[in-house]
Image (cartoon, rainbow, N blue to C red; front, side):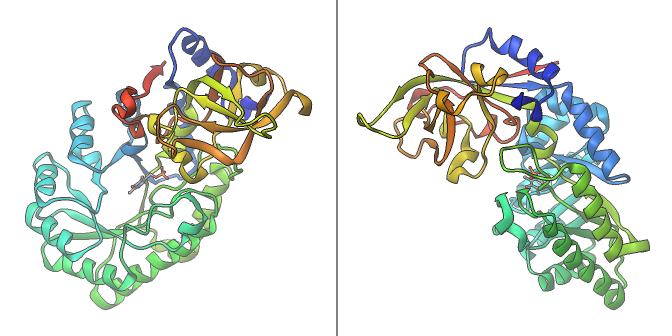
Length: 393
Ligand SMILES: *Cc1c(COP(=O)(O)O)cnc(C)c1O
């Protein structure tokens, strides 16, 4: 059946047997699945270091498992830092990947043993030189490929090539180690060509620094952007890896720097399912073409990435999990959340088809919802508590 495209039957049956006993809304996650996802990364990108982007899902069971597997981590705040250190991760496995940070934050990271920092501006670099002396820094460059990402990231981050070049020189001159270049092609980037352009840009800086300054960069950080499985089709990780490794070979050949990957979505997205309940099904007038289906969770309950209908989760009901319905048994709907904010509509332009006999109390399953859901959930908008999360071994 359809859902097996998104999650193996055995994993789903394990999760569902737990979810059936729990109150919605919730996110339920297959912790055992992490091993396979991590292995997929290391096998497809041999030699690359995996820095899991904690923001995708910072739950302790996920971090613990990744620490055991030997993963490194991309940390964006002192709060994420405290969390991952408390769970026993050595600071040598951490990178401070956020280019937006206070001088105090840098000092905090340095004091706790972190020696690898991202930057994209002069001020920030000065802060690093002052508060994290002698550390390794990499400079994030702007990325043009954002248009083709389902969840763009990079307009806000990174700097132009010229500035990247001079920041790396400035790093050396201020006693830091100019370590390399990073980029992020945008999250859920379905155009592999975005990596081609970014790697080519990075290599130009790499060779110019070597020739003109005698600076040899040692690392290249390829960021995130690898896909999870949603409705909009994306290539497999193996296909991404084959192409990305080819781009790297073309541009760096024998001079290959050490590679860093920062997967977030692609490591944990497919392992979680959001379970919601139908609150009401209504038509706005007698002859309305579309039913409105109101759920007990929505944009403010963790489904933030449905904003602009950017991410289209595969959605099932108990009925459609096990059978494909005939066209006359289902009908297109508009899906909305429970809060008193008219922005709280998940899908209106893109129409999901749901069974005609869908009733209040029925459950909806949003597959591939293990990343960027739980932490996006509001604390108490309209009094609704944050989405509950369950991690199943
Ligand atoms: C969010 C983020 C990532 C993870 O991106 P995904 O597309 O979820 O893999 C990686 N690196 C940085 C710097 C990020 O901010």
